[in-house]
Image (cartoon, rainbow, N blue to C red):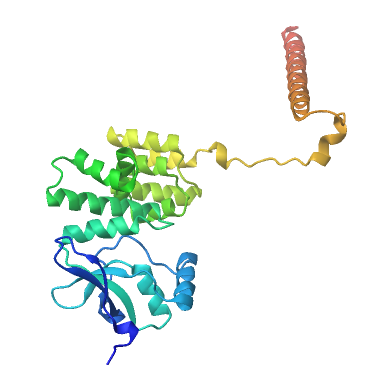
Amino acid sequence: MTKPKSDLALPVGRARDGAKQEIVQNIPLQQLRPFHNHPIKTDNNAELERLIESIRQVGTIAPALARPLPNGGYELISGHRRLAACRALGLETMPVILRAMNDDEAVIAMVDANLQRETILPSEKAFAYKMKLDAIKHQGKASAPMVSRRVVAADAHTSEAQVQRYIRLTNLLPALLERVDAGQIAMSPAVELSYLSKDEQAMLLDAMEQNDCTPSHAQSIRLKKLSQAGRLRAEDIYAMMAEQKPNQREQIKLRWDDFCRYFPTDYTDEQIKRDIVQGLELLRRQRAQNRDARLSGTSKRTGRAGSKEKQP
């Protein structure tokens, strides 16, 4: 009797030794385990919602990849979002390619698969790069850290410097890294802050919360230099975070209707800008003259009063 289509094992290509074929199998969801220390989140976001709707309409087209576990079940290498989507839809199985891999091979395959996602957070990319770098070093395929970074960078189609910058982020406290993921701290200052000790980062977090601010790139460089020199004190951190930064100053917004009557209708933007600057310069000079006049009058009055006191 012919098996139902969902139970068929479909060949998908030859294995690396050329002797066997990998097959797609429909594996019960309860037998699938997430990858150990998986760096990519599968939060219920818009991307996951789109995947759920796609699987609802046409099924799981692309199979996941997993490896057999020694004590039974399978560890997912790629397909964590597909697993979450299938669970959300109440499905019992999903198509999976099974492949025997050691730990290092599994890490490298997992990272390569997940870095292809449309959206990936800085923290996810940081830990993914680090996991792959450590796996390559452990395999002994690269004799020096620089060579290992070169391999990771080439596979990710990026630069070695960028790989190193992302890996630096793994030195940040989770609370700081969350702000990087949220876009509250930019990449450049985040890299500089990664050189601070854990205690210094904790103090920085407290100072940021007290002043409702984040360090600028320039401030982050100053913090790093003080830390590396062994001269970064708590009062330095709090004072620096209390500084007013240009992007935190209150902006003044002017409507065109408020001042258009002061300029000819045929004026260009450059002419308007020129007249505004010239007008403000005249106002500044007038205020300076008024101030000098007041100071001069005060001096004369003080002088006259002093002269009267000297009279017998």
